[in-house]
Amino acid sequence: MITTDQEYDQSREKLASLVGSIASTEAGAAGDDEFRDLQLSGLRSFADDLRTEIADYETQQKRR
Image 1 (tube, rainbow, N blue to C red):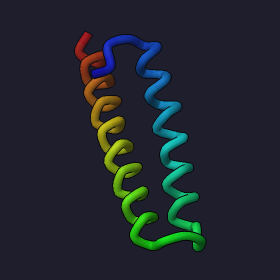
Image 2: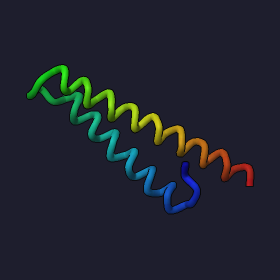
Image 3: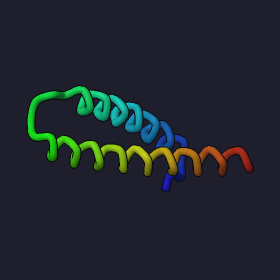
Image 4: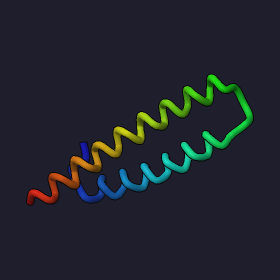
């Protein structure tokens, strides 16, 4: 749960980094396909969680 503006900023930065990692992993042709799929699943899950937390914080801030 994001509770401060600092955490919000850090979460947005982390999400941007994750989006880049997802794109890089999707574009990768080397390595095991099953492992890459597992990596992508984890990255996407983490990104989705951050998006939810960011949206919740933004909604909370609008109510103030």
